[in-house]
Image (cartoon, rainbow, N blue to C red; front, side):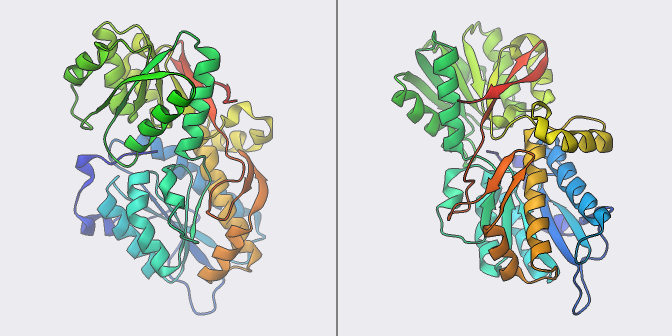
Amino acid sequence: MIKYSKAAVAATAAVAALTLLTACGGSSSGSSGSKDATIGLAMPVSGPDAPLAAPMINAVKLAIDEANAKGDLPGKLSLDVQDDQSSPSVGASLARKFCGNNSTIAAVANYASSITLNAQPVYNGCGLTQIVPTASNDTLTTKGFKNFFRVTAKNSDATVGAVKWITANRPNVKTVATIDANDASTADTAKQFIDQAKQAGLSSVDSIHITANQGDFRGALTGLLSEKPDLIYLSAFYNDAGLIAKQARELGYKGELFGTDALDSPDFITIAGAEAAEGVHIASLGLDPTKNPSASSFVEAYTKAYGTAPNSAASQSYDTATVLINAWKSIGGGTDRAALMEAVSKTNFTGVGGTISFDQNGDMQEPQVGITGVKSGKWEFVGAAE
């Protein structure tokens, strides 16, 4: 799931000039016959979405650093990190940049579904494998692009899990309302939540669209709260959702607040305030690696490298990088994009987030959805949505 911010539409030329090569990298152009290759990574390095993308960038870098250090790769893998600024036009520009670099074997791009949708045709046109750890809009895998894969559950998976958890654990909830930012990343999820809620016997009393980053949502909330929903589903990003939660409580709302994985940041709690955030739950597009014994080595390595424990988006990003590393290793390195794409499609291994394999559309064969809630001022993993 994800949005783009208005401030993100900056000069594409300025972004193209920003190239960050991680410590595992080097020059992004290899010599003729070289076994070396580069993986492109397009994420919001700057702007309001940067805190959400930072753990993902860290996890991809960790996976590639470890693979290079192990010493059994056919060559050296470099990582080319670019700032997509959460802008669809910048995302497409970076796709063209990666496509034009002959040493680039694949792109981890993008964090946001709205950015990913705009970049997809570019990657497909040049035959470059595009793989995402979080972009979850269902339509991403309905276009017939054989080069596209995602290591995450879809929005429909998340909304099914959310409604199952709500009906099983919040029997007082009979009516729901939704709030979204009216873009490809949020409106799609809100609609799917309503559809799933109705199928489960819940009633939808209101559905409103906000303008992202406007700051004051009291006007929209006043009308919605007059419908007295038992639960408000927040299909927005942590910065807007935090303000919505705060302002809804200030307006006297006592019901349940439930959201998407885009709330999964400590900053949501800071913005909302601990009191307003308490009891808010979300459906995450993956499971908390710190609660998964099989992910202990990853958690330890990530925590040692970055001084904080990884979240589910980080574990999905680590698995995403591992998909590319394994596939590239299996073809003997080099920059044969078609061979890599074929190898990725045959992926089947147990990652830190579970079994990683893809169906014919590039979706996960066994998607995972977890429930996380705010308790005593911190996000805590509740369990898998079942």
